[in-house]
Length: 119
Length: 112
Image 1 (tube, each protein chain N blue to C red):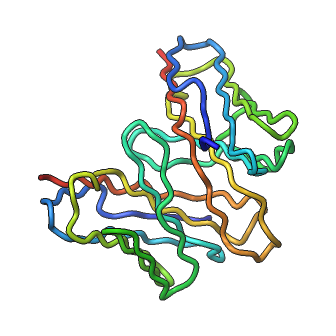
Image 2: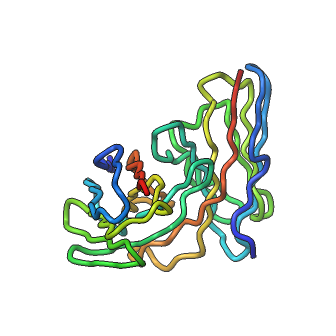
């Protein structure tokens, strides 16, 4: 397994266009996360999937953003009508199944990210 | 709301000059505290997980420690290849997503 793969690595688009990012997680991992990172800041949580179900969304995820994970494998993150404020690195991470509610912490493995520049 | 604050924002060291990075946190029940390393243009790379106060973990020139309010990443005799941004994150017991809440990072530069 080559880890978490993201595509494309870089995307330059004009304001108002739609863009889509793809994430292929580690195959044994059923949990998948999307984060956004701007320059000089740490990653910020956007949304979380367990298998194919999207179970949590951050308030950062406006209605222009939509994420899917059909069949519980790869995931896509689409941004409609992009704005200059959407320029950021979009990171995908995955983690394996976990135990009960009080089991130990689980490690997230991140991909290399997809850098979006909106002109 | 879970919060993580890292200091300093940036640190420049001479090769071999040991130092420490600080991570202060507030969380409603700590499941784990994580340290990641991030190189420019790449995603965060996992270094350590700490679970409870008093715990320590080491890897090469790095040693992470944890108290009830903060964590330290000690760098002993750093080399230029240790230059990177070091991110601290917490994972809380609340919620099922187990997402990480990150600090803004410390950008470390080690000069030869």
